[in-house]
Image (cartoon, rainbow, N blue to C red; front, side):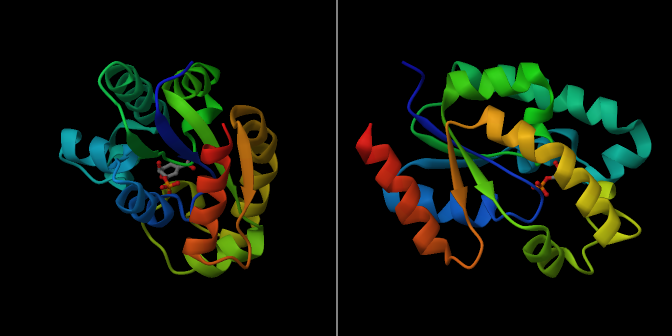
Length: 171
Ligand code: S3P
């Protein structure tokens, strides 16, 4: 049996942090966000880490962080950066930490949410084109990495949380 954490994966703008924070409060769990921890430990914004050290370096930081969280993380809702499960190794680590939920969100919703956002280096430039291409390549990865997929389009945060709780209660 994997540890008792709840892991949220999904594309940028899919609501992992907002859902995760509230879910943790509701369930009396701790909340952790991998992007936030990396920014705090590195003392740099993610955008600047990408700019200064490149994406590979950021991916290494993600893997290193997961390994360090593995043993000590319990009763935690963990919200992950959108690229976290792309590395096979990370997907395996996430699975061993708890139940993995994929917050599936359409390109249209994502674009609506991230329009004007400057903090995501991978979407810099033509948002529509970049989101389309990246989402296409990522969707099968998310599906494979997750225990459960939750369609989030048109749902409120509370509705999404209730679905997650229903799946947790069921097991
Ligand atoms: C990324 C998603 C971002 C952040 C970084 C890379 C990705 O996190 O980790 O910009 O590769 O999809 P959010 O999903 O929280 O935006």
